[in-house]
Every structure is written in structure tokens, then in C-alpha cells.
Image 1 (cartoon, one colour):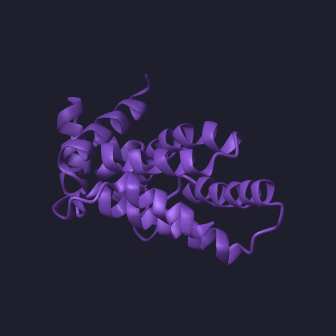
Image 2: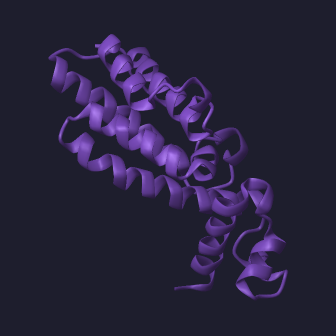
Length: 174
């Protein structure tokens, strides 16, 4: 593992344990056992560090979604998306913060842009018609909203099963 990879790994661990507020160049250096200036050799800004951490999270989520998307199984892909949000809420929050990460490198929009295109292609194959881009975005937004709510456990007090809500959502969307 390279020094850069080690810093990203430690940053990921800190993010998962303490949230974005627990991740700084200095905290990563301390946890990695390097000088406080060492991370700056690889990450000139805090945003560049977060982008590198987010890239790893996006790649992890991408690996979870790929089999379902390759099989044109949108319900399975949606369940994988929700499962990621539930199991890794801090990472899920970070990878969806393009406003925070924009311009920091990491080419994060490559992955999310590809997901939107794959969603459209999957819808076209499964429905026999070409979906409008707004339809793809609306579907992703609905699943993402449910993922954000369940990832942060906002739905727990209601006692409503998130998987049941997902089934209703997918049924209504088509």
C-alpha cells in the first residue's frame, strides 16, 4: 500500500467512525502515524482529501450496483443502494456532496454520470421504450431520498420497513 493509499484508508476509517467533522489532514496524519504535514504532499487541500476518500466510496458502491445493473435488475440495484446508505451512512453522505467536492479532483461525476446513463439503458431494455432523462433522474431521486432517510435512520420512529417502502416506490414508478 502506498503512503497516499494509507492516508485515504485512514481517512475512510475516520469518516466512518466520526463523520466528516472527524476528518482533517491533521487527524489523518496523527492516526496514520506520520507528520502533520505529510498529507499535504498528496492532498493540497482538504477538499482534495475528501474527494479521494469519496472516490473510494463511490467505487465501493459501484461494485455493489454493477451486478444488478448488468442483470437489468432495478429492484436489486435499488436495494443495494439502500443497503449501502444504511451500512455506511457517513460515506453515503460524502459521496453525494458534489457541492463540497466539486473541483477537488477525483472525477467523481464520471461514476454518477455513468450510473444515470446505465439506469436509462436498463429502463429502455426492461420497458421497451427510451426513457426521458428527467424520468431517470426522478427514479434515482426517489430511491436516493429513501436511502438518505433510512441511512440516517429518520424512518425508524415510524416503524415502516424501508424495504416495504422501496417496493411501493418501485411499483408506483412502474
